[in-house]
Image 1 (cartoon, rainbow over the protein chains, first blue to last red):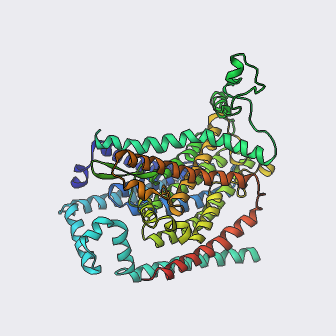
Image 2 (cartoon, rainbow over the protein chains, first blue to last red):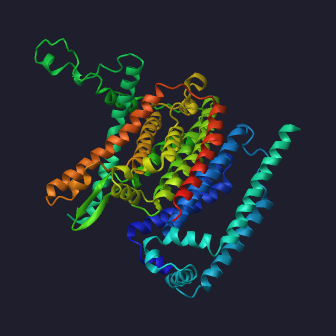
Amino acid sequence: MEYSVQIMSPAAHILFWFVMVMTVASAALVVVAKKILHAAFALSICFLGVSGIYVFLHADFLAAVQLIVYVGGIIVLIMFAIMFSSHTQEAGGEGGRHYLALGAGAATALIVFTSVLMMVGKLNQPLAEQNNRAYEAYQHTVGITAADLAAEPQRLGLGHMLMGEYLLPFEVASILVLAALLGAVVIVRKETKG
Amino acid sequence: MAPYLWKLLPILLVFGGVLGIVPLLVFLERKICALIQDRLGPNRVGILGPDSPLEILGIKTGEKRFLGGLMQPLADAIKLIAKEDIIPPHVEKYLFEFAPFFALLPPFLAFAVIPVGAPLMIDGKEMPLVVADVGVGFLWILAVASLSAYGVALGGWASNNKYALLGGIRATAQMISYEIGLGMALLAVAMQYQSVEPVQIVKQQVEGGFLGWGVFHQPLAFLLFTICAFAENNRLPFDLPECEAELVGGYHTEYSSMKFGMFFQGEYIAMLTMGGLLATLFLGGWHYPGYAALSASDSGFVQIVAVVLSLVSFGIKTMGFVLFSMWVRWTLPRFRYDQLMNLGWKVIVPVALFNIVLTAMLNIH
């Protein structure tokens, strides 16, 4: 953390906190919003913020993909589905807030938060050092030079990893997605025939 | 000048240029529409008010209006700004206010990665004339363009009006469908140039000369991109989200004053952005025949001329696409919605996939 804060200019620092506050605030709004479309919209702002976090972590490619897939694709699809639902029914008429759910949510958030804090505490080596070690490791496995990485660190490294070392998990994940896709089609087909 | 001041130059060029051209586009659209429909179009508000300069001096010319109609966009803009901004009582207030920004901002942001001119030599270093030369290249454009669906979808939903809602739903479905085709067409281009950075892609096209232009290497992608660009911009023949005959005004039915103006501007800026992207990827960007000879000159003046000509060349190509889309708008009838979806999923996506496979096969080393 210290490493990344030190190299940021004051302007970047302000932007960083703006993105952080925006992300957390919109994430909170997703939970408390009374109208479901407001929640969906807040979620898209939250994902926008997450992509901002990727930019601050120098993961530009991931940031762009986050925007294309989540903000531009998935949330738009969710909103598309919501727009087909009725306008009048959605104002949360199912009897106010459920205190049990609220409690469970708070407990989960607390557990996740403390475990993240504990993990951060255990990181006893600076981030830069870890990054260097990771770079060296995949330079070694895929045989690309440091000059290649300096030219295009993001896409080149990611592409080599996906098509090399992690090819099998990558393909397995794609089969999973394909199965989900076909499953959705099958379910929808049955309903229209019946 | 300090180097960071030079960075302001492309920002001013791009954003100033785009904002300045939009009113002109509105004027052009109305004039071209009039030409095609055999009408006169706007011809009243001249450059010096209603009269020609000679008439003001008392010389009878019979020509009442000097460059009549050219100032019409200015009058329109004043009208839009001064008009009462009605927020109907039944709308979702916050989303209603928010949606026009989403219509206006994304096309603007997308323009940031498009190089508009030949690189300038400053203190022995090349500075590309681009606002932000980011590593993710045109992925940035895809990412930002996908945000513009929000403006239309939220605007349609927040209006709480069935016409607007239908327009919003249509726009969302259409933009998602054609984004896939667009992305796949661009994927083939990225494979061809082995890069996603517009600056690098233009560089490769410049090195190839006139025949190095992308349209000669990726003709299929060029065609697909053009079709998808029309659909992404909601222009005719794909303007179902706002088709007047069925939906009154579509998603902007309830909008008035400058909020409507922002939707309107957003549409024209999106046209410019798509035109700029088309020029960059397929028409050699700012390149023009003879650039190599001019830029090789020792004289600093000739080199500056070469850069200025490159700006002009980029402008002509971008405007070429915009004029083409205006021509199409007033010539072709609208698609039916199922035809639109069939074209998107059953024609464009398979052809784009075929193009990707073809490109991969042709580029095996």
